[in-house]
Amino acid sequence: MESKPASEAIRAAHRKLSEALPFSDRADFVDADRGFIAALDPGVVGASDGRAVWDSDSYAFLSGEAPPSVNPSLWRQSTLVAKQGLYEVVEGVYQVRGLDLSNVTFVEGDTGVIVIDPLISTETAAAALALYRTHRGDRQVIAVIYTHSHVDHFGGVFGVASQEAVNAGHIEVIAPVGFVEHAVSENVYAGTAMARRAGYMYGAALDRGPLGQVGAGLGQTTSTGEVGLIVPTLDISETGQTHTVDGVEIEFQMAPGTEAPAEMHFYFPRYRALCMAENATHTLHNLLTLRGALVRDPHVWATYLTEAIETFGARTDVAFASHHWPTWGSDRIADYLATQRDLYAYLHDQTLRYINQGYTGSEIAEIIELPPALERAWSTRGYYGSVSHNVKAIYQRYMGWFDASPGRLWPHPPTELAIRYVEAMGGLDQVVKLAQTAFESGDFRWAATLLDHAVFADPDHIAARALYADTLEQLGYGSENGTWRNFFLSGATELRGGNFGTPAVTAAPAILAQLTAEQIFDSLAISVNGPKAWDLDLTLNVTFTDLNANYRVILRNGVLMSTPRPADATASVKLSLTKSRMLALLSGDMDSAGIDIDGDATVLQNLLGVLDKGDPSFNIVTP
Image 1 (cartoon, helix red, strand yellow):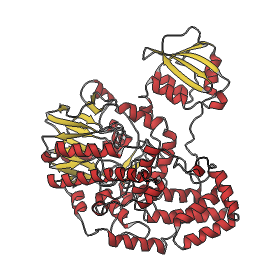
Image 2 (tube, one colour; image 1 turned 135 degrees about the vertical axis):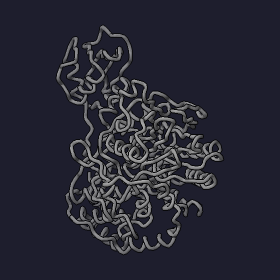
Image 3 (cartoon, one colour; image 1 turned 180 degrees about the vertical axis):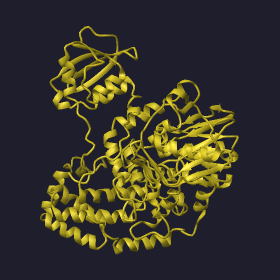
Image 4 (cartoon, helix red, strand yellow; image 1 turned 30 degrees about the vertical axis):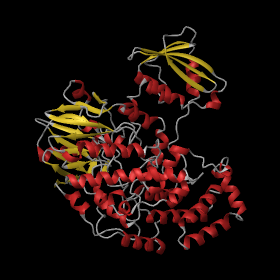
């Protein structure tokens, strides 16, 4: 079904916002264009099988005034973020922007180049390196730095480096301590659910254009090529730690528990340049992403920004990050970092103040107001995170899911609740009638609430689905936040056309290969179908021949436990195999080749028989 136009209520809201924000301020456009050298032309990156894994040209529509179907503030941000090409940050430091969700930075040393954050995919990283070399010469990659443990900052490493070159000592790989543990676990433990939700968050199944996906605030979208991982050769563990690569000294500041569990900032004295990783970008970031993650700590985040200002501010001429465009000039940098710091600190402190006055997370999200200086600063607008869902995340961090109202302690689950609400309101047709009235009055939030109940009570009710899709569409048109827009429009898309599944998966073989033995058993444990396994009492010995490691594995009461220990004579079966063969086995490769089984083979079969795979196409907008 075709998209509908923006309603008059949305158009009026856009006009009001256009009058409230300083659209005449063009400083960001000047900064975003500064140092431009050349764009990739055409802006399409392909995979070996011929499919496009990135297409920046698909955002060519982002020019001129915002159309009625896009929040004017988000249109402005997307226009800035969609700029693509090679840029000089300062002489010797270059960025390729607009070839993935994130930026890749090239820092020139005495003979070669240091690569910071090689994007998501091998293909986009290789294209970025080729663009850099076209204009700066065929410099060899001497080192790769991962600023933190999210896939858009390491996944494209095979596009700029090889495992063989790293093994031979030709390329260093530098990362904050704990990087591998967090990079792997985030993409595996809840990876299926996160990937499915990420399809909504980034609008992966939406058409690009004024009625569809226009960006995600932090970057336009995610590339869909080969994801890789090379384990760091050097872990950075202390603030003040220095390291010299190819004649370039680097001074590090640890920032764990901020935007990522393992994250760091670093400074290049030679270039008077400060890399802020993803802790200071031109948006309010997420404290809890809509795809799902652990809640981040805004208090710690603000503290590390203060430390960065005090440690590097006076000696920095340019601050750049893994997203968006740099900021130049020590005074501007100090103000920019302080504004970002104040943003996270204010949300943290004021949310706690309201909590201690008895307000719940949803109530605080409605009443909290940013100070005027923060409200009008473009770099604090909620294009990726939002005040609304970040406040709820802070509440969750401190108070959990329960808001202390006894009536909300044990509610029915969504479908059962919806059936009762619909019955209480007089049936489905009456609910749709009420929702239609709300829609026509511009109260799309209430219409969505009513229609959520209607669709969960009867997912096949044609009128409810159609109006729900129209309602979510209007909410998307009105959203300043790119990920909110994508969520709303993705919901509308599935209501009209059916479940689109998971367009992109980050649990790539190269990431799975870095699971430790303990993490493999952890991933097994969370895959056990408890009720199916209640009556099983199994003991196995598992020996990883390539790791020279032995584990005792017990399945009892639906719980799988593993312990590193010598072989146990009481075990019913002993397995000997490599770690890679174990991963293949768990992926469904039941061929016995490469597996030495000593004992009762049915034990292994029984264990494998109670493992559930995640569902990458679980329903979101319908029950």
